[in-house]
Length: 405
Image (tube, rainbow, N blue to C red; front, side, top):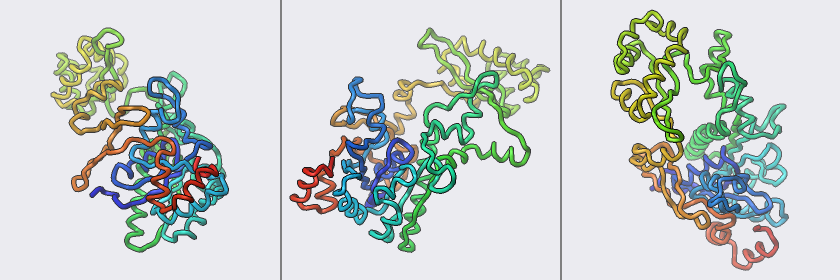
């Protein structure tokens, strides 16, 4: 039996922050019904990359990556006839998840206050940009802008260059984990008490959790961290260094030596034991003061070796080092292959596609990734007839009237 087998989830969410959380539930056995329509698509359905660069709402690898294992119901929430279907869905499910802008659920009659009338023990998770309340609650945006608001952008880049964003909508990948913790807590609370509840998750505030040491440093010491590129105040050498190879095969290796013992070991490994006692580098403070000179010495050593050779040589000596891997490298990575991180499933439009497993493994509930992401409306008949018990004639009418679109 899977961890969340028997849990029924109604998923109104889109893009990444909430869909990734519900995908984890689906992969762990929950029955997740994703609701969208041709009138209001999930943004990722029209986002590249597409298989063979051929556009189509069912051909986006971006969408497929965060919606594996779900059932798709194409329901036009704005259609007057959608109300009865929504009511059936709410009475069927245990959990409702949405990430619309605050106020949207009231517009469609799916706010927590309305849902709890239909099912008193319902659990609803709403994850929006800045939470459901406050002066900026209804301000639109994406993870890209939230990276700036939460301070992540202020510490990304080099001190002598303009600020730059971390890659991607980083808060979208932080939020699912905290959302899952909140959901699991609410599910356990209902198991013990029979009570549901409303969960208000602010993606902005989720981003702050990952800057806790920096916030503490400012609160206690009044110190604001500035952009430092690849360096660290706690280690030297610390950075990504060029390695041997002809472009585009030339690689890089990230290296970090924190403690004094690691520094002494590093000097021995690169064949320069005298650097350990060199007045320029004999303490972390001295190494930081002469970091450009130190980095040049390290780069001279790494550039005569392949990235893999650098990594393995240093790792054997107990020094933290890792090849800077590309997407192709990741698919060939022996550790990820051993862990069965990538699962290849056949998608009706995309064909064979690799789906990522969650980063965790549960000993008592083995992971099985069985179904690819759905095409739009692929499971209309199954959801309506099998899950909701809608009669054939009513199902045909819903199709004819455009309620299911």
